Structures are given as structure tokens and as C-alpha cells.
Image (cartoon, rainbow, N blue to C red; front, side):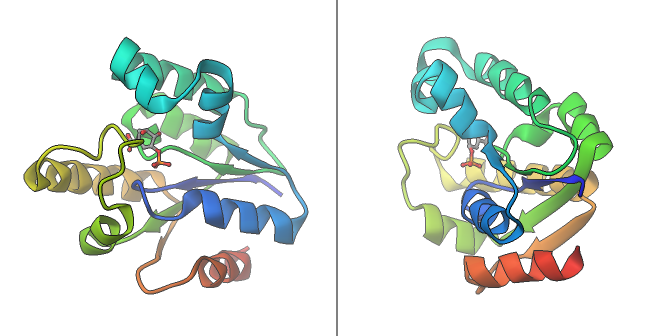
Length: 162
Ligand code: S3P
């Protein structure tokens, strides 16, 4: 089985769904954010001390470590910011976009200090959401709407598509 890459905005449930898929399919789970944390420390600290570009470099490095088959990979919301990341995922595996409305994301995330790009005013967040939405849609082989769905239902939907 080709590796499945889960992409989508912060708060769309990529990690939770990824772990569930991995359990159901008995294949390994990898999380690019967690890999960065394990190797370089907390994401908020990297953004604060080294800047976003450094984080993006670490993130791309971790993505390249993911295998082309037999794995579920949850990615950070900004993985699509780099074209080479998108090309890598498309070449390597199946790319699934977990989509959620801005309303749903706002209620799920609240004010999360661990997500450096989820700060500032609502207009900035909306702008990021709209710009990213296009990037996710373009990158993905399929999009799944996650509003009003529990992680288990999303997992089952993805399994039914395999
Ligand atoms: C980011 C999303 C985060 C994390 C970092 C940057 C983004 O991951 O990679 O804070 O640019 O959208 P999640 O999507 O898992 O929250």
C-alpha cells in the first residue's frame, strides 16, 4: 500500500485520524510535527528563537524521511507551503486533505499558544485559511469534510476509499 499523507489546516484532526488509521491497518504512523519536536524541541520555541523558515526546513527534512509505502503520515498544516513538499507527497503516496470550515476550526482550536500561526486577529486567520485551502485542494488526491464528524467516522470513510 502506498503511504497515506494527511494534510489540512491546524485542528482538522490529522494526528488523531492518522493514529486510528495506523491501528486499523497495522502499519506505522509518523507525524512530521512530532518528529521535529523529538529532534529540535518544541515548535513554538523554534518559531520564537529561530523563525518560521528554520521550522519549515526541519519540517521538509522530516517529510523526506517518510517511506514511499506502508505508512500513515500526519503533516503540519503548513507542509503545503513548499512546492517540493507537495511534489514529494504526490510522488510518494496518496494525499488526503482533511477539510473543516473556519467556524469549526475556530471552535476546536480556541487560543492555542502551542500553534504560533494561530494568533493575532481573526482577519489574519481567515486570510491564512483561505490561502491554504487552495493549496490543500490542489495538492490532494481527495478531500474529506470533517465538520460534524468524529475521528472514527473520518477514519472509516478513508478506509472505505482505499
Ligand atoms: C502549522 C501547523 C502546525 C505546526 C506549526 C505550523 C501551520 O501543525 O506544524 O505550528 O503552518 O499551519 P498542525 O497542523 O498539526 O497544528
